[in-house]
Length: 72
Image (cartoon, rainbow, N blue to C red):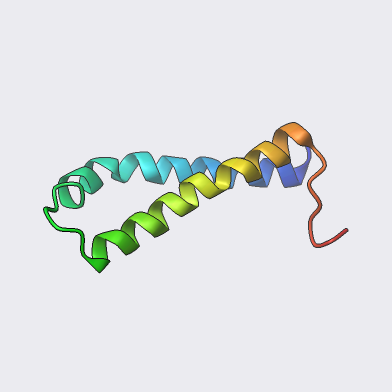
């Protein structure tokens, strides 16, 4: 495994580790809202965009193996 894949693996691990550390607080604070205002919507968008958006990047980086960085 080269350095780029190692650094990517560490960053993805930290992302998901942080997600699972804070999921209990998220459920208690945000999932109990009765009305959907702009604050919870923005929270959901930013939180789940980073989680779900990293999946195709991981697939391309680790399993496809031909992801280009900086147009190279």
